[in-house]
Structures are given as C-alpha cells and as structure tokens.
Image 1: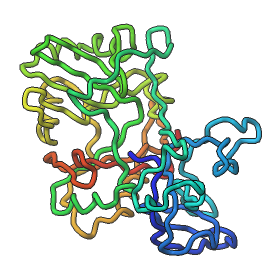
Image 2 (image 1 turned 90 degrees about the vertical axis):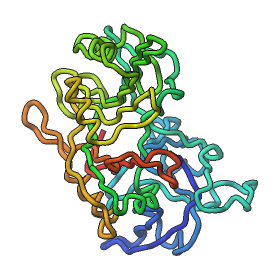
Image 3 (image 1 turned 30 degrees about the horizontal axis):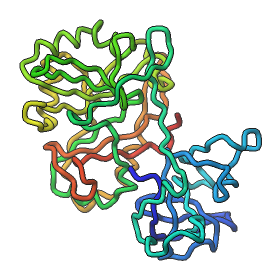
Image 4 (image 1 turned 180 degrees about the vertical axis):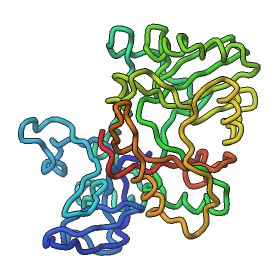
Length: 343
C-alpha cells in the first residue's frame, strides 16, 4: 500500500450548497478539495485514508489539533456537506522547491518526502493485558496480511472480469497467522507483524480452543491466516463476549500455493474452524464498477451479542481460484471499506 503518491485529478463536481469546496475524483476515490485549487487533469499529492501525517510539517499545519498540535493526525473518511470525502489531496507544491520535477509522474511514491506513515491499531494482548513485541513475522513462509484498497488500485477491477469471484465480510479484529512447518517441526502463532510467545492471548486461545493440536496432527505443512476478534481486540466492534477466529487465507507450505474458496471451506470444515462470512459468489463483468462494490460494503453490519447493529468494516473481494495480479504485483485480492464504519 502506497501512503502518498502523485496522482491526477480525473473529475471535479460541485457540491450542493457549498461555495468554497468541490468534490474531486482521484484514482477511485472521491475527495473534497478547495474550489479552484485544482483543474481537471492537474497532478496532485494524494494521501489515502488510514494514514498518519505530522502536523508540524508546513503542508499539514492546517490539520493540527489546537489542544495537541504535535500529535500525529490520522487521515480518515469524513462527510462534508452531505458527501463522503476519503483521503487528502494537496497541490504538488507541498513537496517543496527542491523536489525533482522529473519525478512528477502518476503513482510516484512521495510518502518518505512527506513523512506519511500507515495508521495501524494492532492489539497484541498478553495474559496480563499488556502489549508485547517479539520476533518479526516470517514473510519467507507467507506474506503479511495487507489488503489493497480497490479505490487506490482501481485498475485491478478489470482483472476480475469474467472470473468467478467471491465477496466476504471484513471482520473487525487483529490479524492472526498460524503456521505449521512439519519439516522443521515448528508451530508458530503470529500477529500481523510479529511471532508471538505462549504468554500472548492469541497463542493461549489457539491452545485452549484445541487448534494447535488439530494442526499438529494435520498431514501437511500449512499456514492459516484470519481475523482474531473479541474482548479488548481493536475495540471489539463486533461486540463479542469471547474470542473468535475467522479464516480467510490458507496456504500449502509444501507446494507454496494458496488454496481457493472451495478448498478453504473444506479445510475449515475438516479442522472445525470458522471462515469469514461469504456474502456470495459472482461472475464479474463490465457492469460491476467501484460504486457497486462500495454499495455492498456500505450495507455491511455486525450484530453484537446484545442485538445492537453497528456498521461493519467492509468487504474483501477475491477470485474463487487464486490469481496473480499484474497491477498489484501480488495475489489478486482487494478490500472496500464501509463509509459508515468508524473505529
């Protein structure tokens, strides 16, 4: 995921009742910008949602909190004058006079120049409720979970065309990866970025739920990724009273290949694991645009244990048979965030 890039303003639309702002389309995003700040076709610096910027930098000073002007500012979805705005668009002049003009090309990454960081709210809780840090995630076995947003990578949409595709609800928790490497007689429980020790709640859950024993008796080296949800995990938007694990990716470590939808379902059934909810399977054609996916994402809800309904985080879209994406440069899989969702 690129955190700040040079992009082109594709469209500009007036906002009803607004004299000083307009709605710009950048990549697949819609962003509120100042009127007359951009013309259609102009290059800009685009910073997507779920990033953090430093308000001590000149170009971000207008975002600073009066109460804490040095606190990093998170870029997130907002609603202004009745329209959704996702991200931040700035004139390329924010890069300064020393910026090499030859690099003013679409998709050029300028996150480092602007000090933009990814916003992450990872919860790794141990038995006593503290946060812990351990060994780095084993990327040589399986990639970290880092879903690309379709709106930042809208060209990937065409790669779904005429492929059997499934859409799942995005569960709200913290990423967990289970790895059984039979060759090395190794069993690992990992958060998004770290290998965990037995004191971590994730690890304890895997043992107490019998998942570790099931995997150790499984006939293949395997990696299983999913969302760990429940009390004290990322705010527990789902309102769970106990921990749950929802599988979304399974990889055969003997062959190095990812399993498809039918195989994931079968493995989850065999091991007694829950899969993330599948909303449906579809053959994607030219009638599917970003707005259609956004509508499905905006319809997602979690029904908490007390019966209360709250906006769900969104959806994930994948082909039923794994395919490498030329535009993403990794396996084809994208997310779309519910515009009503708040964390």
